[in-house]
Length: 226
Image (cartoon, rainbow, N blue to C red; front, side, top):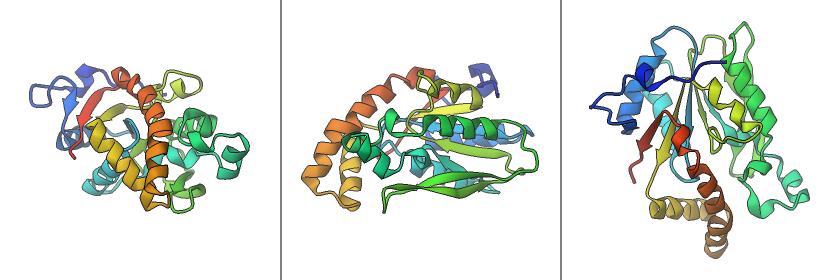
């Protein structure tokens, strides 16, 4: 397992702020980490709608070669399983994920690269289902971006993820903007606006309150722009 970097390792100075970075500042930090020679795992976490997927793609496109992005959402349980468990209205909560599957994948990515290609799943919002074996991580990938809600959750088995990450950034965005984004997203993928507002209030925001308790375990906080 990798040792999470300390503040000294990160060399956060006055330009970066006291552990708080802009998106550009995070990119600079990732570039520094990438030059150290071995594979690095970069974690992006934060409440629903804070911009994790967007920032992950932005970071990947800003680097050459572009690193793979591994989303925790690929480990959603199948919708049929979520329905059978009576959790359809709580989709996105910790219990609606294959937590051990995600932990085991992160462990593999953090270990010796070897000669094998590691295949990670993705999540397809258009069908609300995970897609297995969609994202290849090849032995030569010196950087992997991992993004998801519960990277810093201090509960079993999620607590095994933090030690595997070389750097974990917590994304922060104004709650009103974040919730508007979530409502618009749910409408875009088929919910009516009243349904979307209800789901955000009763599910997404319950998850957000849990995720906010993990902020202090991040290496840095990234202030996201609207």
